[in-house]
Image (cartoon, rainbow, N blue to C red; front, side, top):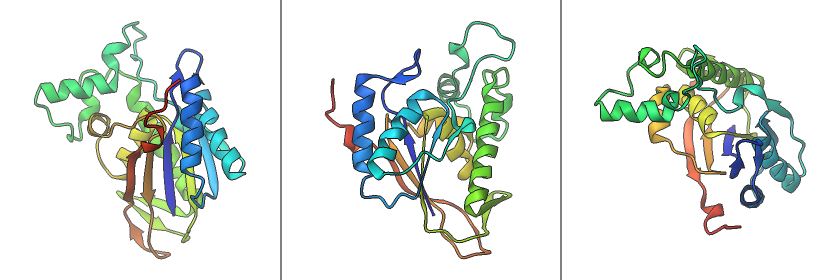
Length: 223
């Protein structure tokens, strides 16, 4: 089985919609995927993600199977409701870890200042568990750090979502920490990440990267 993660096109975050440029991005990524043997298409519940997915659905003549709430963009607001959101941005906090010579691979990252006081820890767990639930419906069941093949599949599944939720899921799939992936796995608008699950029925496997952040299809696109 192959999972193709696609980040949404250029957005208007306030309206949660694609901009004019974002629609061009979405059209370009749909064209980029036209020759992929896609079987299923999912998107997050956010408008900018499912608007992007709709271009792929139209190009492939496939329905959008579901809007996945666990793949919506991560909420990293402070637990105590204070208004200063910016200091809790996981990208900002992970960069501060680098400046402080802290290991981003430490398993206790959730207790680090900036993460411990943020809603993002629970959001990362929600995305990870939700995606495992989706994988189980596709025939791959999480066992510890790996996946058991319950049913072999040659399907190609597209999931259109966001930089944050994709980072959370990729960290989980490859047993990396969320701050490490936040700081090192930058995904461009409509960037494509391909993850493959290969193995025989009953086998315990680890997923493998095929493509990471392929965004050549939007090079040179302007409004």
